[in-house]
Image 1: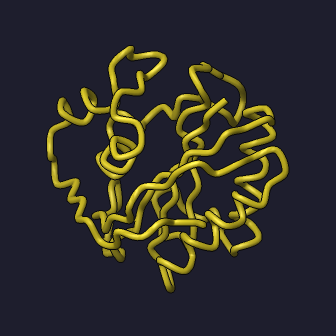
Image 2 (image 1 turned 180 degrees about the vertical axis):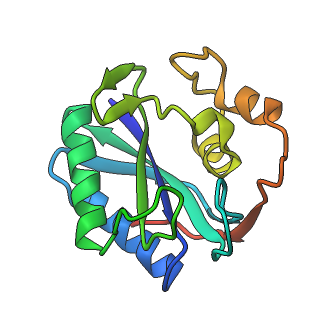
Image 3 (image 1 turned 60 degrees about the horizontal axis):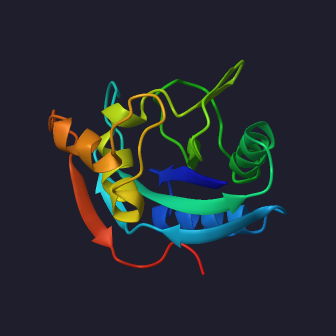
Length: 168
């Protein structure tokens, strides 16, 4: 099963934070990273007040573990990197989101796949389209490219930053 993970950081050395998170994801037993988007600088969304811009990317990983265990591993990586969950749209050293898990639809306490806001977020769709433009959203039944095309700009600036692989 191929899973897609959103990676973002807007604190400290954003690139180092994102690359470290990608490397830690690659080290999880039962996961094999298969591809990664470029990195993009993105304006914070839903934020009140001043924050640094984010560095965002998406990686694809083949998974032999369940979506719940996958999420538990992502949360543990965030915790080990110093992520504090103080305010909803606050700055973060690392942010890892399980965006898609194959074609599965999961609605459980603390786990929603596909990610319920992914189709509204240019910072998710731009890098995701790089990896899987023809991939269909399992609920909306549109491709990632179609979702991106339909999304208004609305101040969601996404600027190519580094065309380097996010992990080896």
